[in-house]
Each structure stands twice: as C-alpha cells, then as structure tokens.
Length: 497
Image 1 (cartoon, rainbow, N blue to C red):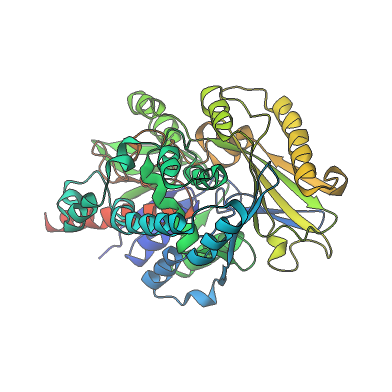
Image 2 (cartoon, rainbow, N blue to C red):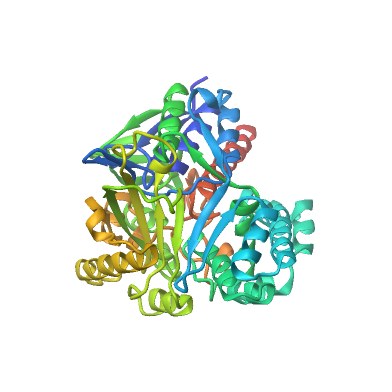
C-alpha cells in the first residue's frame, strides 16, 4: 500500500513537531522552509565570540518535548539535555526594591514577604488557585480543539467549567491580582504574566492567572547549549524519522481542487500531497498561499499581540547581581501598556527583560564576559519610524539599567545587534511583527483564535503560534499535537468510507 504524503509549510517549533508526529504516523513528510535554517523564531547567531539565542528565551513545561520523543519512540537524552533552574527571575523595581522569584511556593512567599511586606498566605493561596485553574481549565482548553463539537461533550470539560469563577471571565488579570495582593510590586510582578502571550494585563481576562503556575509552581528549565538546542534536537529527530527538509524553498501557494488541498507550489513546481500542514502565520497563509480575501479580512479584525524590540549585547564584563532571567520594571505599568496597545508607540520608561545564558554554561561568551539578550515590549508594526524609535529606546534602556545597577552600562557593551518588528516579520513571517499572532485582550480571544483546521478546505490544517492554542513554545508543541490528531481522525474516517 502506498504511503500517504504530507507537506509541512515552515519549520518553526510547531512545524517540526508536526512533521515528526506525521512521520511517526506513517506519512512521507516534506518540510518546506523559506529560510536557510530551521526553527523560525527559535534560532541563534554568533557575533565576535558571543553566541545569542535569537528568539524565545524561557523554557517551561519540558513534558511537551518529552512526550514528543516518547511518541517517536526515541530516548530524549540522546538528543537533548536540560536542567531545572531554582530561580525563575530576578525582579528590579524603580523604587530600588528587588525580588528573587524562586520556583518554590514557600520560598517565594517568604521572599515577597521579606522584600515587599506581602502577605505570605495570599501568595500561597494565589499559586494554589493558579494550579487548580491550570489543571482543570488550561489542560482541557490547551490540549483539545475548541472548534470540534466532541470536545464540549468531554467529561473533563464539564468538570473544568465548574472551577471557573466570574472574575476569571468578566474581570481583568490586573483586577484579579489587585484583589489578591496588597503590595503594588506584587501586583505588577503577577500582572507581567499577561505578556507571556503578548497581551495587556489591564485588558486580558482574569483567566490568565493560570499562567504563573507554569513558571512558579512547575518551574523554569535551562536547555544545555541554550534554546537553539531545542530546534537542533527536533531537526535531528525529524531526520531520524525520515522527514525531508527543503531550505531556501518558500511555498508560493497551496494547491486546491474542488474544496480539497492537493499540495503546494514551490519554485514554480507542483508538489502533491494528501495533507498540508501550515506552520506559516495564519494571515500569510490566507493572504498569500490561499489568496482568500474574505478569510484574510477575518484575521485582520482581531487585535495583534505585542511585538518586541530586541537588543543583543556582548558585554565585556560580568554582572554578579544578574541571573539567567532578569526583569527591570517600568514605574507606571498601566501607562506603559496604554502606550503600547492604544497609542502603538514605545513607552519612555520601558520594562526591560535581560536574559543571560552565559550565566548557565561556559562557551556562550568569551571568558569574563556575558551575552545579553534584551527584550522590550513593542507595539506591532503599523508603519512607525522604527529606526528613530530604536535609537531613543536604546538610550532609555542604557539609562534605566545604569540607574538600577548603579554602573555605566554603555561602556560595557562590546558588540551589538538588534531585531525590530520589521525584521521579525521579514525573518519569521509573523504578520506585523507580532510575536504571538493575535492578542488575548478580549474575553473571547481563545475562541476567536483560528482553529487547527478549516471546514472550507479538506486536507488543510494549521499549527503554530498564530492559531489555537496560541504563541510560545509549550503551546506550539500542543498546537502540533492537536493538528496531527485531527489529521489522524480525518484520515481514519476516510479509510472507512
């Protein structure tokens, strides 16, 4: 019997995971990638002896990648190693206060009490509720298609809905946190988790209070070799399973015939397939690959998530007060998010995230030096003058870090590179440079996010950060699983007809 053929468009994390799953399911799989490398946002580069992860820098929920290797029947330790990090993040506030966010509830509660005067019981209670909410709601909503009727007849859905409280749906995350904590710094610290999917804590629903569970209860992890080792492990596994990669091969369009996807056009040649899985941004999939103006406009109706301005700095000395993950908060968080989402501008006192992988292992920066990855929330690209904004922002960031660390940061920068929303779109195909597809700023955002399939075109499926269940590495793994399980169900139905 001839094997079914599958084409995967794009080799981001979800595309790689989807390709592996399809190959294990018995498909002949070809991955077409427009760049010369795999990984999408999860890539890296080297400059002047400093190695930088180019994109996502936080690794949580390793069970997603563990599960993928188990599904493929391969020992993960032959491909990939990681370890738990006790300290999830160092927080620096403009008033001089500092907090170490430990990935141990009791220790974190003690720290917030000692440094901020926060009520320990309130912290422990919040983290317990966050865990319950994630285990009951998150696991159901993030692991299943919300757009298939049978999901809603699942017993676990009914149980999940019983744990939802009104503030989770009607109130904002900021409002939810305000009612939970006394201290403004604690509220700001927990508000920050809205940015995990590019959203605004003053608009996104209280349901997002389940996100802290992933980092503060389950823990943060460090992959040996940096985040790029995730991409490298997936590519190696895919090749072991027979997946064929075609780099520098942009898909021009998806072939459709009588309501069915029949393959793709690449380099002006037809590549026929039984199944097409698009890991491309859903906007570009409809706009360029399907030339469907109606669906393109439907995607445009939804607000984009925020983007980011990234600086990569090779620092000529070490900073002992910093760790792997560090956050320097803005003084006025509400004004910052208003500027980003309503005015579509950069805020003049930005929150700055600094990731330093050379803190975790040698060889990522020259001896006695550090590789800094700085991410500052930015609006999605609507035609702003990014060159001018970047120059201003760079100075603001230097001033802020110099003030907070009481040292001259500018003189410590040895080499640098940057990424802005325009470059993000050019390199990763993320429409308007948004890092997470659509934002989760509305109560219905989870349901409005594009499903992993379309009823209009049989044999066409979607995965990645711009479709259900959303952006970020854990959700991209889940997205690939949901999409490939739908493919399996649909193909099984066909086999019986």
